[in-house]
Every structure is written in C-alpha cells, then in structure tokens.
Length: 119
Image 1 (cartoon, rainbow, N blue to C red):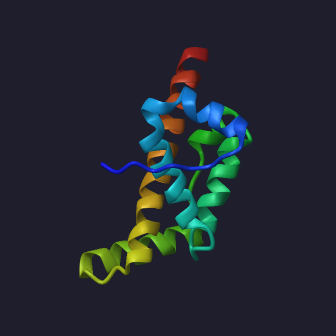
Image 2 (cartoon, one colour):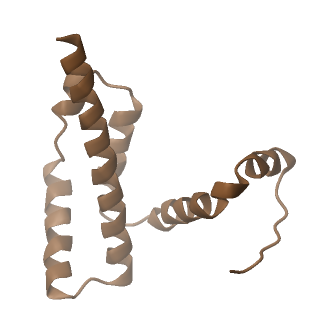
C-alpha cells in the first residue's frame, strides 16, 4: 500500500472524505474511465451507456441489442484474446466491454422484474 497526497478543490475534498472507505475502488473506476478516453471501438459502449442514462422504459431495456459495429469489435477482441495477441490497450478495452456487459445484464434483469411486477 502507498500513501498519496493530493491538492484538490474543497468541494471535491468533502466528497472524497465522505467516501474514504471506497476511495481505492472509486479511483480504480475513474482510472479505467480515464484510460478509455480516445480508445477506438468504445464509442459503441458510450452509445449503450447514453441509452441507459436516458432512463428508457423496461421494454426498451429488454430489447436492447449491441450495434453491428460493437458486435464486430467485441468479436475481434475475443478472437485476439483466444490467440493471445491482445495488446495492453485492447485488454483494457476488453475489460471495459466486460463491465458494460455486466451493467446491461443488471439493467435487463431489473427491467424484466419490473415488467413481471406490472403484468
């Protein structure tokens, strides 16, 4: 474990102090997001996240499917992963897609629960 000292704006410092137990995880997520900036291929992921952020109806969430471009990129990464030829950047990109898939599965599960309750 290492100690890091940072100078941050007061409002951010207050927020960080309230989440001190979770700070390592928050920083890890933030660094993943930061690393994804400008990476090719993750634009499809951004589209999915924007869709979910729009708070769609449960039926729309259940019907959500990846675009052809996103499917092609994921297939390419899977192939490279099996061949053992993923670059470090592609491995990070793959991790992002795994996280995105997890979020979509959660959203679809909750949407299905809501649909069942309303039926």
